[in-house]
Amino acid sequence: MESTNPEAEKYREFMEKVERTVYIDTLPPQANESVLKTGLDQFGDVKNISFIPNYMDPRNSMRCALVEMKDPNQAKNVIKTLTDSPFMIAGMPRPVRVLPAELEMFDDRPRKPGRKITFKWLEADHPDLKVAKDMKRAVVRHATEAALAHKQHLEEEEKLHKQQVEILKANYKKYEVVDGVISDGTAQRVAKRYGMRVADD
Amino acid sequence: MAEVDDPSRIEFQWLKKRGLGGKNHNIQFYESFIYDGEKYTLYDSVYMHRDNVDEPDIGKLVRLWEDPQGHKKCRILWYFRPWEITNYSRGETFPKNELLLAAGEGVGLYDVNPLEAIAGKCKVVCTSRDSRNPQPSKEEIIGADFIFNRAFDVGRCKIVEKMDDKIAGVETKLLFNKVGKRPIPSTITPSVENSKSSKDVLKNKECLKKRKLEREDTKPAKLPKPSPVQSTDERKRVDNKGPEAISIEERRSRWCEEQPWDQAMEDGYVNGSLVLLLNLDPSYTSDEVKELIKNALKENCSAKMVQRTAFSSPHFGQAFVNFSSKEVAGRVVVKLDRHCLVLPGGRPLVGRLASIAFKGKQSPFFGHFAIDKLKYQMQREKREAVSTSHCSQPNTIEHEMATEWALHQARVNLTWEAIHKQQGEELKRLRDRFKSV
Image (cartoon, rainbow over all chains, first blue to last red; front, side):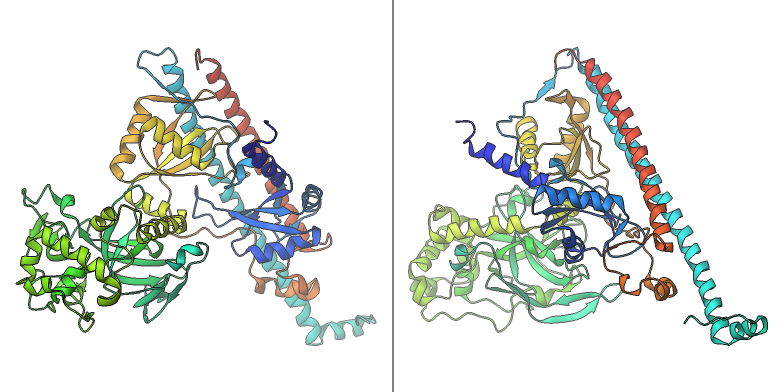
């Protein structure tokens, strides 16, 4: 009787979907569905993609997505491949991060079969009132701590970003100089002077 | 109605364009659009859907636009229902179908809404004797869902007979009846002939009602098609059984689904009716949260569980709940703060007014560089790989940089692990102190 319960059946089906889905983040804002699909189709068959809206920090442009593959093996394969070597989607050089999806990441998750949420208002003289209040304060503090950590991480990212831009600029300059001496003939003249070959061939 | 058959797709199309506007000249204004087979034009009156409220609000479309993000918006100049202003109307009794146009300056004059919140067209006729107002025909008045001939000044909280030249930046003459759009019925019923003036019609509500009924009886042949959404009292009379009534409900529920939560949330935030709940079991669904609030706090709301990401706390879930007003939201927050609502698993619920900044500059995505900076590198390395998805090759500068990001990610992961471990332990210690929950 219980095994044929439609609610339980729906839940079980949903858990199967979770199994074959991967969570991807550190995606740039321009990584849309088609970009993501093209990028990941090489590791299996992408069945469905949904983005997780960022309501907690709408100004952060980083995107997170859930990508449903054909089966759990494909999902595992995606996670392994993309964790073993840096994989970039819609930009570089920051790689994406891939993790197994979890039930709580889905907006359309069904309710746990048979669950009934009970609740209790604590009276003013209830023995647990103090600890409940302590816990409420702790939860608020934890949320603040998390927000601070998040902010700090973003600052670190900005710093790394700037650093890399500088490195890249220096690199660019180096190539320019190299190209410059080759195209204006300086390299050839110097090579001739010292009796060296410079041609690539 | 036909649209009931196919609830999945609703036709939408902008029609006539107006100019561009906004700071960056990237907002396109419009004059009209088609939605679900109905044409809407500026200064039309519409029913506006509002969550948890049975009677729809009514307003006039005074501006229509689409922003660069593709959000379709409208500015609605409100009408007041007489019962909304009973505090200021000094016991005056109003004809049942009278509305008062919002005027003056202050809160409640107009609002910006997503276009999707429009629940249907509403026939509102202006019966003001004002010389600027093209006088309506008797048939128009009888065919109208509502009439208005006065305004309610939201700043002074007073009913005013004479309207200023401009209301909410719109020339008042545009807010009166439209010229040249009179529907001409093929026959005029004798009862209409009898009525002396529009005022008489209004004074005699019963008479009006009766005529409305007559109109319904004779509607197919003699009068123009009634508007899709009938006035509320008419709806009550058909007892929600007629085909019209069902389609209204259908239509509204579909609108309701369509209204993007994002927009509702942003509006809720602006209005102060949005609350963030913390310390929920992370596996709760949005519906369960909604039911919980209904059962425990006796308030209606729309709810959205925040979807977990790799950054979320594994110890508790969060949800946004949007109430019908700032007052309700305030009440809920105070109640949750002063008292303790304990949920299964020893979780006292925490509620805070949501303080998320929707507006403002979006932070850039760190870690991706513009292509031109990479031009040189590309020529030497892998030109074709610019923006396609790929694994980096170990002998490139790109790979080196990617590794730096991976390192950063690993560090971040460790920090989160440490934070969550410490927070989990603290919560567990607290939970162990519970005696009875």
